Length: 455
Image (cartoon, rainbow, N blue to C red; front, side, top):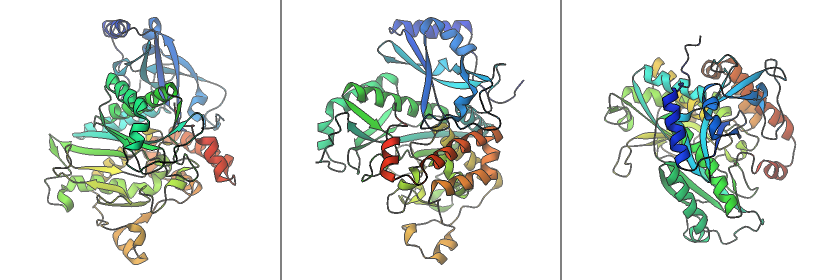
């Protein structure tokens, strides 16, 4: 039997309590969803009276679910093909009544024998969270989602005001229903506002344990798409939804404490970090050039991940430095949750379970090795000379998807964190994407992938 952390199996009484609560709210169907290797939301739906089976034995899913691509192609690998079946099991403890007779629950992949599958994205984050807990760390994560809101009619708003009030008023009914649905689901909406780019909004959610935080991000994506359709709108989560527009990010914040004591403040290191806090940050910065193919992995990611776009195109850290991949947010009066780091190079085409797990795993590697914190980058890294960049250890992240995948494929860090099977699946899917769109006009790629990562 596997000793890896796994989805807990609820007792008959516990399942009965969940079913009774859902039935009391009028739920008739339960949707079990995953985010696959391409960052796409997929799932299966069952009647409420089959929820016990959905949780315990799961529903069937071809092994090829691990290598589905954003364009619905299948990137077969030597180990994943037409033969074999997996089981998709719902985490009923995380089930949420989302209204309209429907409940949503995150799911994990298992083998037919009931073992956690090696290619399970949520299971990967579960393991990284458990690894942090094993060394006595308490981790909080929080996510942001940038999205572009487009009318199904195709008629865009030509009077967009960056961070303005007019976009909020123009989409007042949509935004009000989003807030209502997020409140019903207990997502902990922190803020929602018009962003810099045309037709672009951003929302952020309250911190939670990593697995719970990413579950909430996934449910938020589903609810955004669902509410948008009711209002004749489509939500684009593409890293580059419009040829002439700004890209969408999916920044992740992480904070660490030990025995209730924060590791990013109260210390005698740079910006108040403790020695352990510095090693956690150093681990992330050090790994970014190798794992950016997990965080900004799509054919459109490199369009967004460029200097001057506040996308975190450089592997370095700095206090409130929006051009650094790791922006340090100090414990000040303006930061009610305390000191944390924001990893800015993540975009919505990434599987958020993989992205969060990879960042957390990199931080833990830095902690275990006692990796020293590199010097702070306190200016726009794109303006550094070659000598200054070398002194500070600043590295520009991969400029193309091919370069990012080359680094990921060769990365010992990624293989160590992911395991061979998950690493192979993630690379295979993105290699297909790279080959499929290589040499294609950027406008066509933008058009074809505009809604690939949306519900």
